[in-house]
Amino acid sequence: MMDHAIVPHWFLGYNILLELLFFAITLIVAVYALKVYQLSGHKQSKLFGITFLMISAAYLIQSVLNIVASYSTDICCDMQPISPMPAYSLAGIYVHILLYASGLVTLAYMTLKLKDLKAYFLFMVVALTALLVSSNPLFFFYVISTILLIYVSFYYLKNYLDTKKSNALVVFIAFLFLMFAKIHFIFSIDHGTYYVAGHLLEFVAYVLILVNLLMVIRRK
Amino acid sequence: MSKKRGKLQIIYDILSVINERNGRIKPTNILYKSNLSNKMFQEYMSDLIQKGFIVENQTKSGKTYSLAQKGFDYLDKYQMIVDFTTSFGLGE
Image (tube, rainbow over the protein chains, first blue to last red):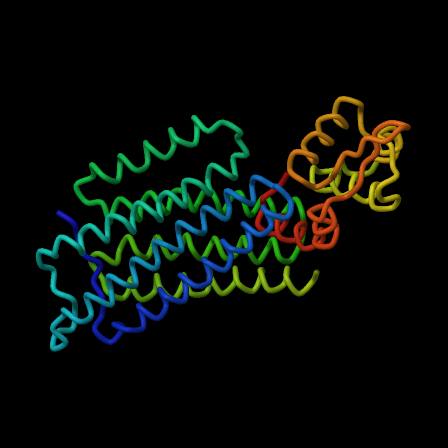
């Protein structure tokens, strides 16, 4: 059984716009990270690029699913109905979950600065298997994402304290917002307000990441 | 005491030395100016050749090194690369 996130009726459409925006921002970051890898041969940049590429694909799938859902939802209702969903929709949600979780596992692995691919695949297999066999993958996905983002946020806090650079602070705050967003999504399965709050927190996070990227590009 | 150089900084230093005397610099000069141990120097040089940053030339008086286009691009975009990797915590 896959639970739905409850979407307030008035927010339908805005959520799709926001997800498409997240898709675009994460894609831009991924392209830039891979460009840095191409220029420098810096492997951490490649991993970071792959992370954002996976997250970007996850948002694209999520937005397409929501576009399809918005056409098939009865607009007289305040909430999307919690009813059996079509197979393609279920498959889409699983792909979104697996891509986003893979991205976060890759990011967490990158922060560990390990040079052992076996460790990476171990983390990946454990996280994805746990999601796939869970009785409630969406809820479990938000919990796993929150845990990974707590770890990643601490890493970025340390990065800021080590470098004392303003753009490192911006990135730390961005990941903090992403973490709070995922915490809100945990509760969005029961309350539509949390779904909206989660999207708004993610919006702030990705705008901050974009601001940092623009700061980097302009300074060159 | 100065902070330990990171990998990106070391690559920048090696490429800068070669760029100063492009096409005419010998390995001993690079080793001296890049301030690396012989072992580290060999590792960095073979890595940079393999990744296409520098080109090894065989002359009558021995080996010399010059920058490939990728090496020039690296020097040109170095500050952006450092800012990107530092802010996103990509380290060395």
